[in-house]
Picture (cartoon, rainbow, N blue to C red):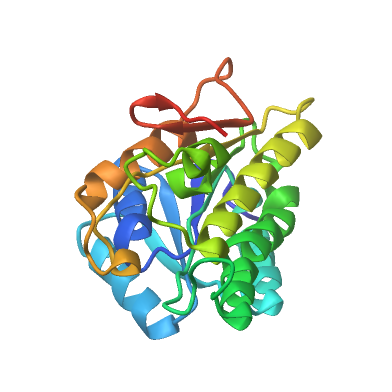
Length: 244
């Protein structure tokens, strides 16, 4: 019989960066953390490192480009735990061939959308039956301020010159997923929200960010533990609500 007494969290793209830090902090809170990664060796090494700190962290293969891994992960979680309490859709990519609409490589844009948006949608669909079995399921979609239409049209904003049609559109699509999924689940205890981690130093941006991974993980962690009267369908950073 599955052990349903534990709080179970799944994080995609968790073998490094913000995802790894989210896994660490959830583990430190006593959760059973399922560290999702597409590369088994890197994922197992990351999980083993956290397990070495006496955290209950286990690797699960989760390649957003291979739907069979999502189905297999869902079946494994169902057999071992019977439910899923927290899903953090963190996995995401950027591509150097991305850029302005007039010059961006279409195949690069397609790759970004496939992972960042369609991958998040596929994982949410695959895990939804398990989240419905949780008394208080939480879905956190890791978005970006670059997914805000308001910020993108403000030519005086801090990141006004960062115009990456693939990446920005993918995060705007993630925000739409948040809104639509929150609506679909409005009559359930499940809450769905988007987290803007801020400009965090990770491999994704060549370590040019000015925040630490601890700071970048903070809003996703907060949203993962929202109380019953917390928001759903929101988009926020640690400083507060973000404009769509």
